[in-house]
Image 1 (cartoon, rainbow over the protein chains, first blue to last red):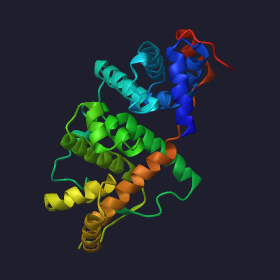
Image 2: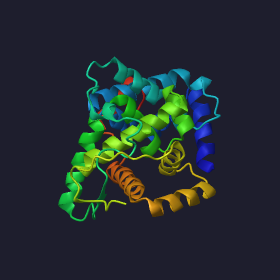
Image 3: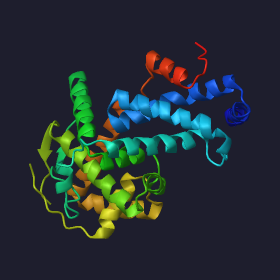
Image 4: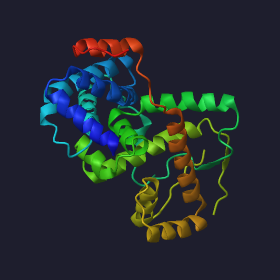
Length: 198
Length: 83
C-alpha cells in the first residue's frame, strides 16, 4: 500500500516537472519492460528501441495517466502495443511453422507420451533451456505473444484479448496451439515412453 | 511417435484448456479429475503441457538491463541517472 502511495506521489511530482521523481519512475519500471520486450522480440536491439519508445511516451503522456490501473499495467500496455507493431513491421515471420498444421481435432498434439523424470541432471537442464529458447523463438509472433502474456505474464484471457485486439475465443485457440507446439518441441528431447493404450 | 486422433467432445477439451489456464471452478475441477482418471491420454497431455509451462517459467528470469542500455535510456530521456 505504501509503495502505491509513494508511486502516486512520484507520479504527481513528475507531472509537475520534478526530474528526479521521473528518473525514479523510469529506473523502477525499466527492467520488467525490457524483459518483456526481450521475451516477445528475441532481439536485444529491438528490445532497446521498445524500452526507449515506451518511456518517451510515458514522459509525454504521464499527465493523462488516470491512475485506474497501476503505472506498470499502463506501461505494460504501451510496451506490448509497440512490440506488436514492431513484430508486424518485420518481414521475417515464421509462417511456415508446424504450428499451422495443428488442426482443431488434434488438440492433444503429435506426441502423446509420458515424460519420465524430465529434468534430473544439470546437462538435461541446459538442453531443455536451449530447446525451449529455440522453440519460443520459432513460434510465430501471434502465438508467442499469447503464450507469453497468458502463461508467463499471467494475464487473463480477457486481458490478453483486450491488449492484443483479439477475441477471447481466438486467444484460447492460439494459446492451445502455442502450448502444443512448445510441448512437442520439448518432447522431441525428452526421455519418453508410449502411453499404454486404453 | 504416436499419431493419435482423440475424439473428445468440446466440453472436455474446454475443461482441459480452462484447467491449464487456471480458469476452472471447483465443480468443473472435479469433473475433469474424474475424466482424467479414466483417460491416460488426457492425463499425459495435461501433465506434459503443465511441465512445459513450468520449465519455460523456470528459465524465464527477468532480464537485467545492461548498464550501457540503461545509460542510453536516461540519455535519450534527458534524465539524470542516480548511479
